[in-house]
Length: 523
Image (cartoon, rainbow, N blue to C red; front, side, top):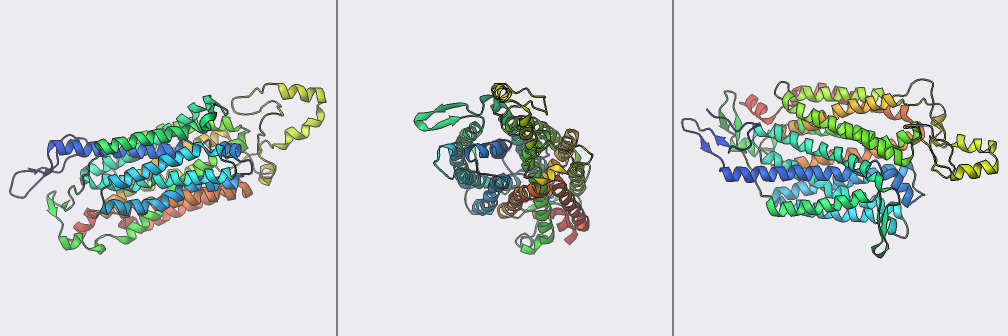
């Protein structure tokens, strides 16, 4: 008896085993090539979507301050959250659209919206007023365009067999992670353009370290549209009506069961959405707080924070790719549920490490101003024209013309909450960089298996919406709590939330199973 095509061999057409007859082809070799070409275009679409999110994450805060000096850290939370809010609204819409119309339509429209929003982001500086609100609006529409993630994942789930799906969904998540890698890396590389960069007054264009990533995102979006029009083809319904039976044979699913809404374990579906919400919620908090936290704790300038966090996130992204590839191997040895639980444990340890301790405190911004009285006017004039010499991570020399560094005086907790040591921050990023990709990819794999043969566009849309909701509330939560109460009251509750997720998963462990296993139990 031949089984459905294995994960590693994408070049062989799918085979169907009929009882008492020879194997027959489900698809031709040409169809197989077309199917995998379309799947790889979905990998690319996911990759470009994640680049659109991550390429500006480290620079949003200094760019926001540059285009509108009335913006504060609380507004930063809304700007970061607006991306996910737009994605949360769009994901179910695009998911439902893809269930009833060719997937090419929502893909092209969503990417076009993304391109237009990136151009708006690059021109925020040229608008006469309310710049911070236009910046927020541009990020919201970039997120709305990124709602096509639901279409991508539902297409890949529907265009692969059960045995192909684990590897294919892992590759989707790996493509997303690769985008998160290259995004900060590209942003770090573009710091060489500088804050002023080059300008073209005829069209009000300013190409600098803040706007160049947005224009790059627009260019990549246009390229993505061209590839979808030229190469993407619809391939769905692979093995929709067949599951692998207990004895290893392929069995037909009764039509009454396939069409029954009750055939899906809704409790498992809701639990999966809650767990996915928590995964994205805590990670959104980490990536949002990275730049303000390091500027407060280590007295980094905006440019330094963008560069150093970009390098750190690059390392975390490389780590995530390795973890994704390792996860594909581990799924053959361990249950998906067990790997998901292990990922949550790693995330918990990552945030626990971030809790501040010790007797060393952050540098306060006003210390330099207070010490100005010790200088004569001649000395101050000399210092204003001097070049700042920086230690690699901390302690700048006095330069009154430079931006203010250190923990702001208005954040009262800066005076009594110990510093988070750089080693703590790096260790935390490493642990979260291991736990998050495991939870991310296993959540999608397990969710797809729970849904089984059902069309997954709408369900994937709701899962994406739950993750987008997490990315909406996470930045708002952290911007409000961190500014008022500091890292202790930010990361402490996060540890509690992750622990609650571990408890929830333990209580629902037996229900988090694939549709095939559920069907076998019903038999």
